Image (tube, rainbow, N blue to C red; front, side):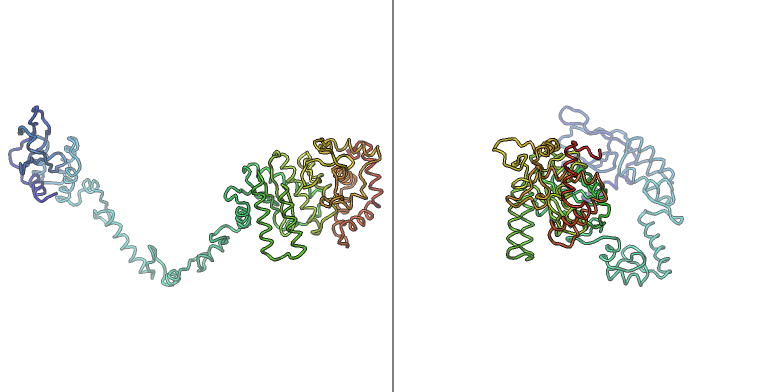
Length: 532
């Protein structure tokens, strides 16, 4: 606002002419009233200057005005009453009149300011201006805060305290604070020490709770190895960490199934060591093959970089990697127990069943000592728990490549291409085994003990597996404690050869293979009904 306008505003407040008049500005064209209930101050430089109910001086082009009519208005009354008011109460009373007539802004503020000029202690005017009372005097909130601070500062200094970033501390504490230390539970520490005292650990440059470290160490490398990034989720249970790209509810459901597997395992082998898994067994589950294959390659790459294996052993590990790439499931027990699975094209129920089976393989290999039992015993227990936990058997890993293509017929011979293999339906195992027993063609346990899942010409067939499952079921039903002791001795015997260890354990607990065979033949002949 220029000086002439400011002067006009002052003139309007204190130099009002004795004769009050109101002005109306009429348009040059049409003769209608354009602006009314205002006070014209002057005409200058082609403009007409006037005051409205804010008491601000405004301008309007004179060329658009046809005539100006003088009339009495509220602005003149306001100025006249303000000039005549001799007390703060009169001015405050004028406020009510002005507000009723829609005066606003500066017009109201000026009344309160005038009231305070006449009486600085007027309560209504002070409150209207946002002022507060402190120690018997009216002041702005900022002034009150400053007085309180000054008063508090004097009190604090009297106590020997000094200011430090908005608070009062002892000189000794200030010295520690300036060194960047923090007081925690009565001790001065660095911020890192405080975090550690609070139960945090630093992982990849950020602080996390110590209880979350295992998950962070688990999920980070796994997300990189699989290439899934944040799409790889993790669900942790007491004994397992389930990782994968399946929906979280399915991972949680698998975690529950695996814990039931562990509970069934403990019923079978109650002397299992508390640290049998040395932490948690990782169970990877992927919807499709690509992340599975990336994980296999990443593991092999780390193995090469570690330099742990050379020569023939390195060739074996490379062959194992290639074999796993052709498969869709695998398990291992060292250096850390883990199982890895691909769901597609199978159902979630089939995936659940395989997870139980392979978790049992891990437990069997780590039970008592980290040694492999004979394969029939390993698989027999795995199928036994698979059936108990899930109510079904769908894991067929005894044909070439470890899948379930069904290349074995009832007597272990090949099936013609395209021919359905009845042994791939576990519900038919018992009836077909009974037929083999009657025909004198049942698998021989004495031969089965030396077979594995890999060696050409010496692999377990599906009938072998069916017998292993039913034999384990029989031995458990006959005497579960004796069976647990038998498995334990087959794992911890003196020989490094699993077959030799098992032979000794069979003789010790069952009197030899012939007696076990005789019991099983009777069991099969009676329709597998012993102990039911």
